[in-house]
Length: 266
Image 1 (cartoon, helix red, strand yellow):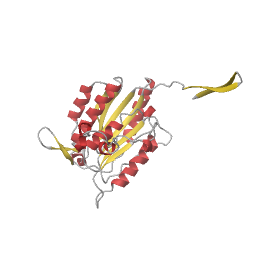
Image 2 (tube, rainbow, N blue to C red):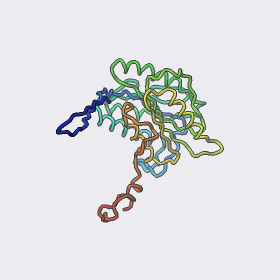
Image 3 (tube, rainbow, N blue to C red):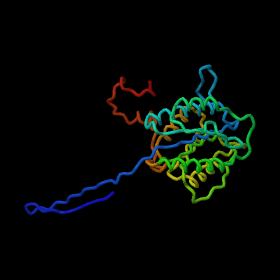
Image 4 (spheres, rainbow, N blue to C red):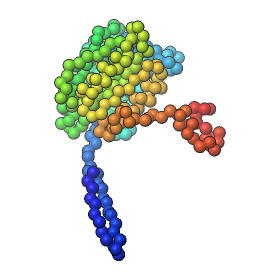
């Protein structure tokens, strides 16, 4: 901010005037690559969520729904954002390479997405970062910024990467779905590795969100946090959304009538 201060006198009284102006900055349109982990662990069933046929939703089913919700909301905010899709198994593969701002393109990509039939070895994110850097250069030449959103589903396999620490040309967000800790799982170590990768490559503030509860609604709520534009973000530690309806209800004026009671208590 630029500040200008000055004093003036009027009938022996002095007063202070201040005028501040905020320099305008351009908020760029985004190109967003959504990368979905299709290791067999993505087929773990979610709790309290079923599909049209009554079958429990898997992590992959829920991720597909969350992505359609995310893209639709993002395009409502700004129809100039564009999206492409890739999958992560033993290697990185394109699902839909051409960036598009059509919701039908997103739906078609989600229909084409399926889980891998074999468990992968320790995944390497180097090719994902290399691909993102290549695409980010093309986006930047068009006055856009580039973001990767990684959906990761493995509870024991820590990803690895080889990437120069001074090359930050895209923003990385991570949504991590995992099992609870156990003899065969180390989700905390996987999470810490993902945090290190994010801090290593992200141009703007990147967010990492996680859930080990297996609840689809938690996934949907957290994915909506990723609607935030990288150029307008606070650091993740300052995020206080989404707020719990139950906690918010406890702060309501006690004079509120039953007709205004929160949905959660009905």
